[in-house]
Image (cartoon, rainbow over all chains, first blue to last red; front, side, top):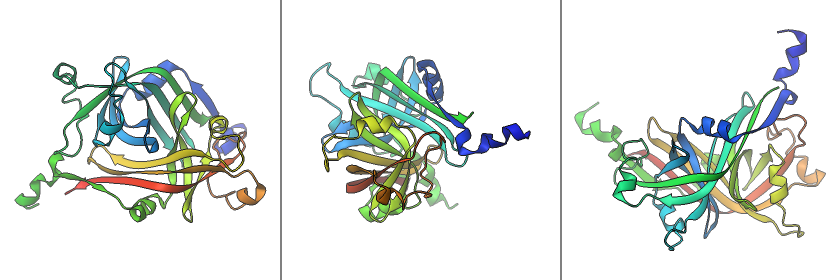
Length: 149
Length: 149
């Protein structure tokens, strides 16, 4: 490695960059484990969910009914405001990215809405727990990446 | 593997268990990447932080000043209510755990408060960004684990 690159591996060689929406969606494209973020009656809440991109929205499989109690307004067509967070941080390399997508939580309650999602790998890991899916169509997307300069 | 254990690896062989506070703190003991969760003026927010256990509290190193603007009430001794989330989910094995600890966000603004934290590995990854630390002493801790029955 030439001398003028030597400090690239030092912490000060890292840069923080804001990501555009397209980059954020590209980072989320593979789906996986994310976190559903919302304000419950007990305060700020984030718990893991499995998510997949479906067109311009994120579809989440909740693995616990804990979400169900908090994420309904009780008013038809009025959805709860939530965020979906996903990140991949590497403490060894001191690099990574994080994306936060905010939008309304639409519960997929009808069979017509649920049918296309069944088998997409979002089913809860507990066999006895019924599958419950939520669609979030982001209205704002925020993303950052830390990488070597 | 004996036949009577064969279905342990099926999704329905998983159980969800609530974790006690001591178990939650034990899972957080190694520190690492967690998420600081709060309600910003823009809505529900969660972004990665490095955290360590320090006695009965969690000390966070924020890697972006994004937190700074939102996490001060502007009133002395009145702290913002936040949560710290950490999880380790394995989609292949369909196992994992998640812990959510809620409490007040106390900013370590004085040198006396900051001194013991310097060098604890919580410094921001970006060299030019000044270190900023937050201490959260949990008032409630919620945790779950999914594992084979």
